[in-house]
Amino acid sequence: PMETIDGVTLPSYQGDNINKEEPFTAEARKPDPERMMQAYHQCTQTLNILRGFSTGGYAKMSNLQRWTLDFVKQTPMGSRYRKLASTIQESLAFMKSCGVDIDAPPFTEVDFFTAHECLLLPYEEALTRVDSTSGKFYDTSAHLLWVGERTRQPGFAHFEFVRGLANPLGVKISDNASPEDVLEILNTFNPKNTPGRVVLITRMGEQGIREKLPPIIDAVQKAGKHVVWVSDPVHGNGFKAENGFKTRSFNAIRDELGAFFDVHKQMGSHPGGIHLEMTGKDVTECLGGDLNEVTLEGGRGLATKYETHCDPRLNSVQSLELAFFVAEKMREAKGLPHYEI
Image (cartoon, rainbow, N blue to C red; front, side, top):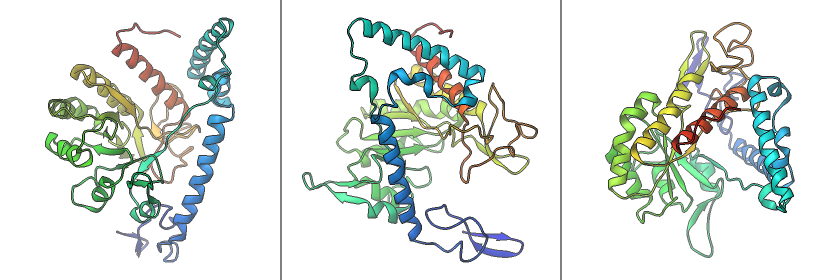
């Protein structure tokens, strides 16, 4: 693909792993394999930070009050979080008085796993190894790899690459996917029908979830296939705003997520996870939100703190709003009453 600016045509920016977005020069847009090495080292540093946080004491349940940034604490959503944290800490204090060791690993450490889209095949191939004990191939760039809506076609490179991996695999499913498409994917990726092997990640928009997902779930259930159902409510709700910014609607994201829970309750299936793109920063990249709403223009307009180089992300307050919304949907699915904090 090519891009033209002021009469100059150059190869398109294809992501930091391949070339540079700026400056708009032939040298910057030339693919550079060294950028994959830089990406690898940056990922290594990030994983080391995650390991430090997850096992070094920061994950202790008693640290609940420290897990929010200062600017979040000043919001009503931050206040709601603090009240919930206080309730949990009271429960921990009661458990401690009963003789439970709340400094034991289950209360102080967490396991974490990584996942990303299998997109840049030279990078993924370079990190694929054969396990000496089983003879199986594992892509060591992540625990779970997924293929996207545009790369899940049988017979094409990405599909054929991941089908040979022993990693858990994810597949993005849009409202263009038919029940037959999904069953073909499951039969190919998981011929032994191993539980946990395949994650189906739906990205359909609210209407697509309500209309297209039920027949897919029905076909999977009738075929007796084991899958993990995950919602990706962000990628099906992106658009270009009037002022030129690539954005997403918070309300549309929430509506799709709500539909995901409603449909699985209707079908008797289990909503197994959520895929979001978010940040702890107070960015203005996704429109909407009940608190500190991001608007098209003005003091909280998109241009105010639009920092992403790729997809727009939910900010910290929007993420907390969504977390509480999900908690309520989970309580609702279990028949529990609304929990006021």
